[in-house]
Image 1 (cartoon, rainbow, N blue to C red):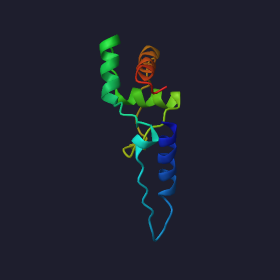
Image 2: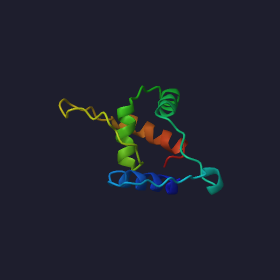
Image 3: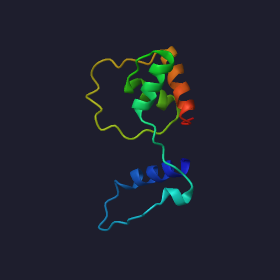
Image 4: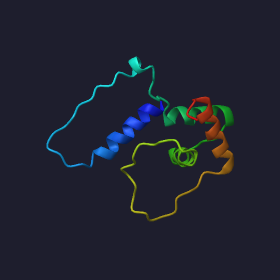
Length: 106
């Protein structure tokens, strides 16, 4: 999986380059023997709710992903920076980390 994430990072880093031509690359993940991560935030929310009874938000999942060093896609809806951002409570962070382990994200 790390190879796939590295490829995505490279594409993101190169997208800002001004160029007159483009290069298309077809990657067959099955031939590489790798499967892209298909775990969604809804999967994580459902796991935490079923196992721990907590309702968690996607914000909490994103915060824990950042602390765990799991790559996230770019967020285009970042707001104006006004207001207070709630932080994930420790007990919910532990539950989310357990979900990451369950889904083999860490």
